[in-house]
Length: 159
Image (tube, rainbow, N blue to C red):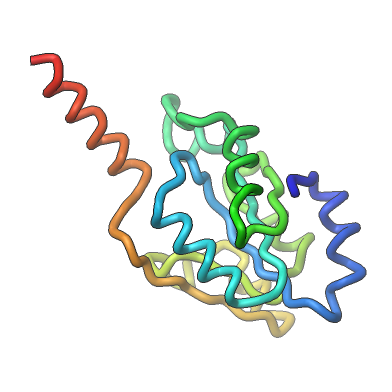
């Protein structure tokens, strides 16, 4: 379910004591097997998986003016359609710090390519006894790599 932060908090607060809330975030621009594996592993760390999704404006600031490829409403719809994902919340900021502080997840998840000291919100989550987990990649794949490959193929097709 795609919710704004206020509605999400109203859903999470009553179940916080009985369920383990897991939070992760990302742009999820062109969904691929790496994303699916990552989200599956994140869900295995608790009961409820909340995905913070960077808004279109946020993605542009982080990835550049030509991104995202897929608009936020479609990215949110796709994430919400995936079995491991319980809730999607779109955020405008460049980092999910505000979401993490509001949601107070039991488990914060990022990819294994992130050093724990660089994970936004890690110190906060650890401060109240939460956990920070890093998920190893199963597939060496990224949206940027997919875009580069498509551009290469397109360029080759013009010859």
